[in-house]
Image 1: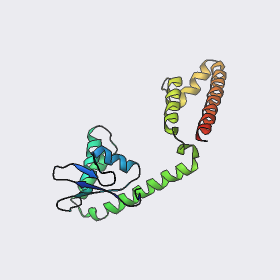
Image 2: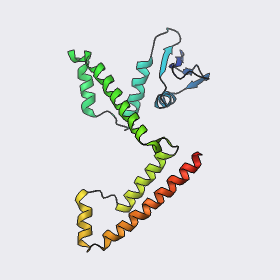
Image 3: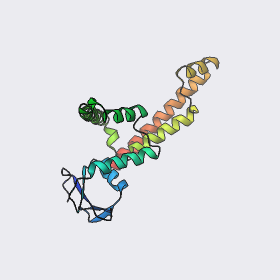
Image 4: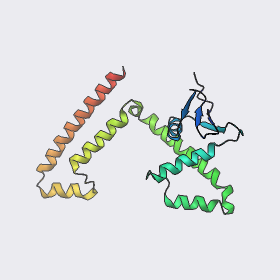
Length: 185
């Protein structure tokens, strides 16, 4: 059994291959990103020199995700980061970023605690399906004033139909939640 509190040790061989010391197999950058997404810290060490290469590889993972269009870092933030390397502000930036991500993590944890369903297996998939269903039902139109305008023009009969549709959707959601809770038992 691995000790999840200790960082996962990855050794880089001279051939640049990355070796997971816990499972005794080679891993890719995407595997390492997966370990991190799962909440595991990693440490990447050069086998020959003993140098810690963790920062270099984490930056490479971020760069690859950003280059594939998975833009998490807005352009302004990237510019500010580059500027922080050339100004006196660099002493403040690491502490600020660390504190900001700590606050984000705490906020996410509180949200998970407040919504116990979010911990259920398959919840994210169910939530995505619900969002897709609602988008399909509304034709992707989410303008705030548009719904009220549409119902007033039709004489209110659509409003009653929407209420019935909403009741049906709520019933279907309750049925899905019931089925999911039975699956967990």
